[in-house]
Amino acid sequence: MGHAVDDVDWEIISLLQVDGRTTNVGIARRVGVTEGTVRNRIERLRRQGIIAVQAAVRPEKLGFQTRVLMGLNVQWDKVAETARRLSNRPEVRTVISTLGPYNLIVEALFSSNDELGPFFTREIAPIPGIEHVDTFHVLETIKDGGDWTVPS
Image (cartoon, rainbow, N blue to C red; front, side, top):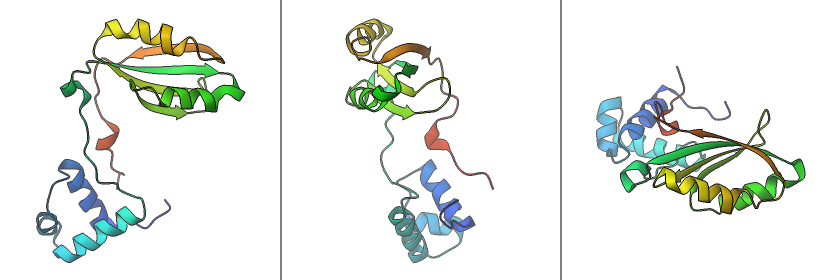
């Protein structure tokens, strides 16, 4: 796994995932350790890059009602440049380089379905090297990546 994370660390991580504003004292009470232990462990987890404490944005609450995932087949010598160009677009939330049926997986957010067509014709189509795009219109998110914890 890379870094040693014990059961106390996982409890702390789980509590922070539920409410990132939970105080160290509150976490300490729930976990059964001292506040200093919680403070030190959170700092160690942050320093090791295991966790990052940040605000999670809920796009739908900001008016982004349309979410799409795209699988792109891109010429191999154009993957890095395509990923960079797409990453610079404000609509694009995630760009992942993959092996398998697609070279890139892209997540993008829009206020409405009406913005999809112009995005494809003005932003995707002009990028050299894109051979094929499959689009997956997200109906509902059942589990979000921010909700993930390692099974015990």
